[in-house]
Image (cartoon, rainbow, N blue to C red; front, side, top):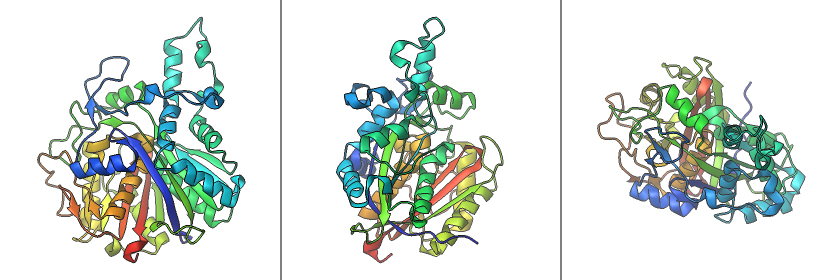
Length: 401
């Protein structure tokens, strides 16, 4: 028997991506439908594509106390943490509950593998160069260990790496920890930086577009890889917080159809959706908006368009925002959760940017341009490699949800 999800208050949230730093930058970009994609200027060898690169990461200097964790991924994490008053809100939660009663759950697909790549490019007599000879950055847990130290979190610290669903699944894990009474609050999030492994790896799979990605376009040619960092603070409702935004439910599934291709029927995605509805006690008719996974790959978009058409009532609006941010991989779940929260907060349905001619498979649910409308409940979809699927339901309690 499924356990009912414990609704939680989203007391703070923030994101950094190619759209800029913080909530205001993301809202401004959504309003203008301004893409952060640029011609690839990152990879160590030429690769004709577009990327979502965050400006200023290379210029970040971590405080000396955290020098052992210094790498590009953790610098981006530092940027993402230090905005929107997030550290103060996290520290206030730590003071309320105690450092051991706050969990930290972060998603990433590659962690600090960029530093490992650099180390191998600069091998000195078959050894890593001295400046990169640090165990702490050559591990998938590098990100979470660094953020735990930076925020002085002593509770459960978990790294979740399930490809593109990583930083969506952290919400489900956090909800379980709080519902079971193991912690009183949780900081969730995710960080993934650009690196050769992802750029050339996805290109080898023939999934990278040479042009800016165009989710749900009839002539889409693949994904544009981006980088991002995002964080959110989850607490029990009424636990000294009046935050109107809520996490209502989380649904997960694993369809195990193929290592890199979703089940074309959308069965895995549908199972995650139904799991979320069951746990949250919601009906599909309650949903006002869905932020789609919408990667601009041929098979993902075809699967998701079919899912929308058969699952949601005509009044539900849907869109992908990956033309704006790029596909931020392990950080996609948190970045798109933040965009969904902004949509709820401000009554905005973001347009499905980048489309020149809509795929005929797309139904009337799609919002091709921004729409102003009051939103009570909104979903965020994250579907990863290997059939690792997660769906999140958020609500604005100020609208009676």
